[in-house]
Each structure stands twice: as structure tokens, then as C-alpha cells.
Image (cartoon, rainbow, N blue to C red; front, side, top):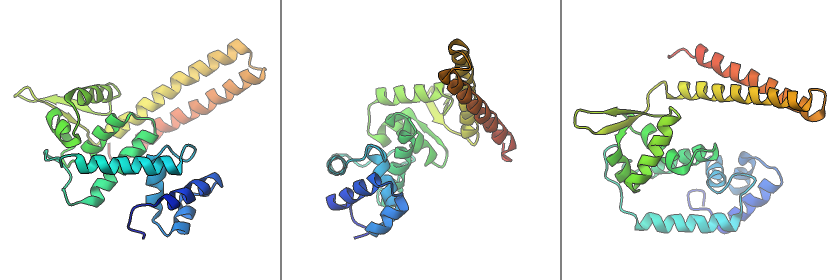
Length: 228
């Protein structure tokens, strides 16, 4: 059934289709499922190159058991207990951040902040909403703050609020551009050491040129964005 959980047979079909190089839309059509279901399933279970049907099936069963055992959160800004679609979206959004390389706890914090109207939660609210330890939240928010992905505001009651704003992703893009520039310099230095006419040196020169172009495009994109 399109609205039910994926079966092991369906997961085996997904694995076989990925091996054939089919896209999510084609796979979804074969299974009579939404493409978002297939995308979420693959992203949650290692991505296209690491997806394994039996492992994904066991992981889903384990998540379901943990979900039944967990106490529903009641913190401010939580998702409505009956809103399955929103909880499903939160999981998908988190998985996408993880797939991009963000540690899962940091991704869960970012998702919680993005889905809160105020864009702000206290550490205690994050602990309650995500059902994790204060130490886990502390480690995650400190790492995110260092990356300029969230900011901290201390109230008069000495309570820290962690928040995102409309410029969060602008700053993220500029940070990525800065990181790209550091790679450009490293690539050029490597090319000089190897010799620009050697195959390895030429490869590093090409990489450096591409990253230089990409970084400049990022900066220009932020400058062109109208709502800053």
C-alpha cells in the first residue's frame, strides 16, 4: 500500500534499482510510491552507494521500537503529537543534513530550530524535545555556534537561548566560500611542489581553479540575494 511502511521486498527492489543507476522518481514509479518516500528511505539508510535492503529493514524496525518506548516530548515548540506528517518531515530534513556531512545531533538541533516559529529554543527545551542528555545538546550547540550556524542569547534569567535567523544560511554560504578559498591555496601550493606540468600538478591546478570559481560564485550569489 502506498501509505504503509516499506516491506523488505520493496527495499530489495530499491537496492536493485539503485544498482542499475535508476533515479528516485523511476524507482517510486515502479513501487507505486511517492518519490519523497524513496528519497527519504535511501538518505536515511546510507545514501545511494551504501544502501542495503536487509540493513535498512532492520534499522527501521529498531527505530520503530525506540519510538514506541520513548515518551512523547512536551517542550515548547514541539511538533503536535498527532502530526505524523510534520514528524516525518523533521526526520527527512535531519537526514538530509546528515547526508551533507553534519553530525546527527547537530542536525537534529538545526531541524528543531527551523521548525519552531521563533527560531529559538533553550537548552532545556532542546533536551526535552529531542529526548537526549544536556551534555549532548551542549556539545552540539557549541559546535554549531563555532560554525556560525546558530547564535546564543543569554536572558536576564541567565538562561541561554539558541536561535537561527534569516541570515543564517547567508553566513553559511560565505563560510563555505572561505573554506573553498583555503582549499584553492592548498591546491596551488601542491601544484607548485609537484610541478604544474606533471599530471598530478595539472590536476591540482584544475581543482584550484574550479574551487576559486565556485567560491566567487557563492559570494556573488549572497550579494545578489534580495532579502538581506
